[in-house]
Length: 215
Ligand code: NAP
Image (cartoon, rainbow, N blue to C red; front, side, top):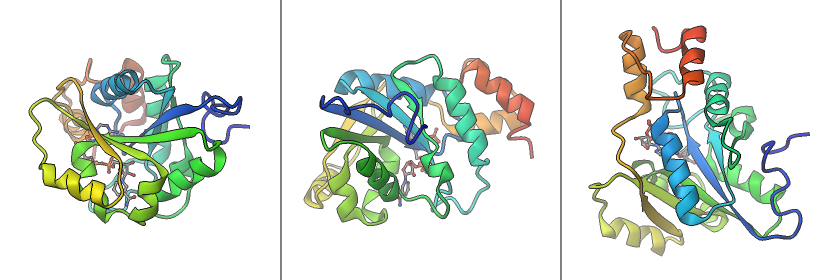
């Protein structure tokens, strides 16, 4: 039975220390920027794998209709299927109520042996709000945090000092600049503009079949 993810459920259970990347995001839809970023962080940090965790009900996104979790999960699964060191987890989609990262990290910590470490990967701009996230003291104790930046992104050093002073282990990783965002893809689909080569072909097929992003 799958508990967290099909590919990584046995990680660390043979006693070997391991480091799992947790790629948190709304992924509405997933695109090549997310995939390239996860791949580059995986290699740079020598991670054992990267688990994509699409958010269930993002607490800060009440202002817009986020696509159903089942669709965002299905698109992630299609996008990562051919990469053996990537997998996707439905733990946030399956959990009722607003999605808080703390609950996800607690579930992962309860499942994996203590010698499996977690690195939570997300956009550096999303990380800028981390001090406002739910139960931040425990959050800081459960994972290290990786903010991905594009070349040229400037973040105030004082921000990192504040994060570290609050107990967070944070590092920034610069990844290839791809001026892409999920909202850009959604807008293009809504305007009947091609998104070919901006995400995986199977994801595009899914978007068309399910009629996503057309109001
Ligand atoms: P967001 O605000 O939609 O994203 C901010 C920026 O970061 C966007 O440019 C976005 O690009 C990019 N981004 C998001 N996820 C990324 C990833 N994994 N890798 C690279 N770039 C990424 O962020 P979000 O998706 O809502 O939240 C990101 C993660 O933080 C989620 O796991 C969420 O659950 C968590 N979070 C937790 C709390 C909490 O616990 N209180 C609060 C907020 C967020 P795209 O639009 O192209 O993705």
